Image (cartoon, rainbow, N blue to C red):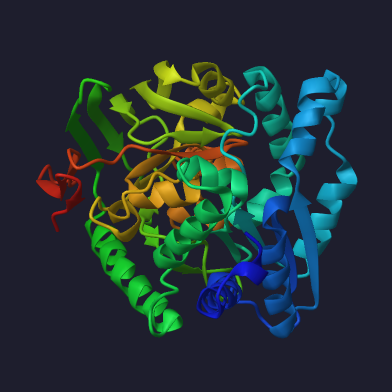
Length: 422
């Protein structure tokens, strides 16, 4: 559905949403360059965000459309040398902008099944190639040196996946409604609503940081479809919980995810033991992985099963040594706006904010005191995982209970039946 077919009220909300992404998302400062990336199917919204950037005095906007169908042609018909090639000039261009204090806006909304008929080893190789090529650039965002935000915009393919019984236009319209609701755009004062939400998340991080728990024990019963969960996650000394807005290296506040409902930190790399079951589909490199169980020993995934997408998941875990370890532990109450919409988005940005989740791969350096200034080796020495990948998967449910253990040995239940109990 084109913007010209939306009524004025809907378009007013979409305009507010684009404004929020620029002002509350990256919090664009006068004279900053912007790197704006997103699916070609959301080009109208991308242009709207670009306009907002220039209205807020961006010095330059580098607009990059992602054409996944073109990528698919390369994956299906290109030689291995083509798939494993990454142009250095592309990374150099990004780095030049980063050195000039750029901010990153990523619009998410591609077809969740776009690479479903591409062999897993091909998408795995492509993902590894891109991650290696952009490793230096990605450090700017992983360490929050620069401001960045990921937000969503419907494409017809994504909308039809979420609402398969609707026409394409109806599905896009309904998905817009869900995105605007989840992003607090419907509030009387959206900016104020985000300030209040950030403060609510900060109250949780303040509590967790004051406690400096030693470990978290995840426990839930199976449903007959999945095995359930019994997992212990140790936390490193001097870990930091974050959530909502954060500060970049220049002290500017930004929101990295719109929407967001999570508070998160990094686990101790070698301190994860037990098993855990996924609770929502995991969008992995354009393929869906569903109903999988991971078995951990001393931090590493030592076995895995899945009802769908097992090969894709195994390729991800084989990306590098760190890919089979965890880099993030995030807490999200089941009773939250996205979860309460009773919508499976098949999109990590939204589904991860409906559910407690973990992430394979790289830990955020900001999740440990002084981490932003540490080398990879130093981060590893402090218990944080390093990897080319960082991929979130969902494990929360109304059956999930989490007990936190203090260094004194005292146990405190922080999640009961899927929701905060503190």
